[in-house]
Image (cartoon, rainbow, N blue to C red; front, side, top):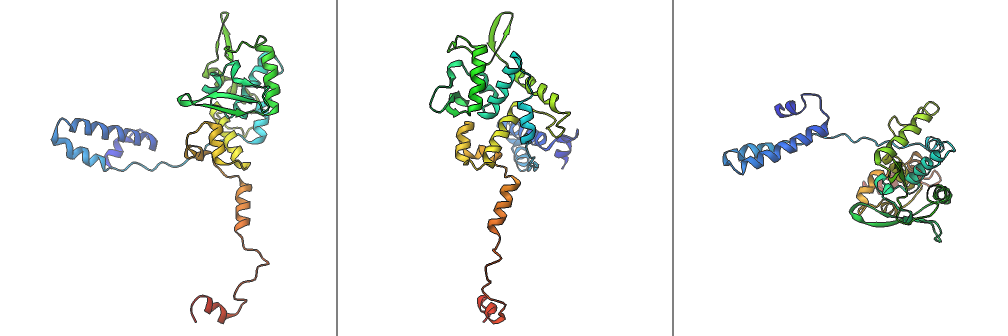
Amino acid sequence: MVLYGILNKNGNAETTCNNRLAAIRAYLWYVADGDISLQSVALTASHVPFLKVPKLTREVISEENLKALLSAPPNTKIGRRDQTILILLYDSAIRVSELLSLDVSSVHLDAEIPYLRIYGKGDKERSVAITDTTVDHLRNYLKTYHPTRAPDSPLIFTVIKGRKDRMSVGNVERIIKKYASKIRPEYPNLPEHCYPHMVRRTRATNLYQDGTELELIARILGHSSTETTRIYAVPSVEMMRKAMELGKMSTDEKPLWLDDEAEMARICGLR
């Protein structure tokens, strides 16, 4: 308790206390390797349990708010670029770092099923199909920003002092924040802080609630394990209602005992 009092003297969160406790444990074992008299201290510290961290519900953007956010950019050159970024983030559930690493050659709009070729964590490659709406936006975007279709050109870029370079993560974050602030007066239920990963999380959650298998969602997201994907598996109210309906006994089903006390006793093994 004394140790927790020290760790939590500034009202730190449980995760912060746990991180500091882990650091103290590691340090004590390190110094105990050089001084055997400290091994008992290190052993005692290793038995101090971590604090239980409450599971927080990760926010997603509602369908109504999402439509408003994706429609928020104006019909200008910059606005159409921003809208393409927002639509790509949602439709492909792509990580913002993956989006910004795409080249023009990563976009395959003329394939039988249009898709993006994405290089994710660990340089793992995956292909993610995109919808017709996204294809239309990308065609217009490429026509405006990549008229020559240079394959090695960064798909999403900025021009600073005449030099074209990949857009930064911070710039994408500012774009989302800008349009979230724009629509918030009309949509006050929009999460206070909107950011790229929230858009990805929203897409993953929507896919799950629409009945997409967890294994397929994992492939779309670029997860090597469905355990990572499971954090997005938040059932909707409708899914829970249907599950309860399936588990409910039909009112037409007749009970085995038919109000017969003798038969009920026999079934329960009392006679």
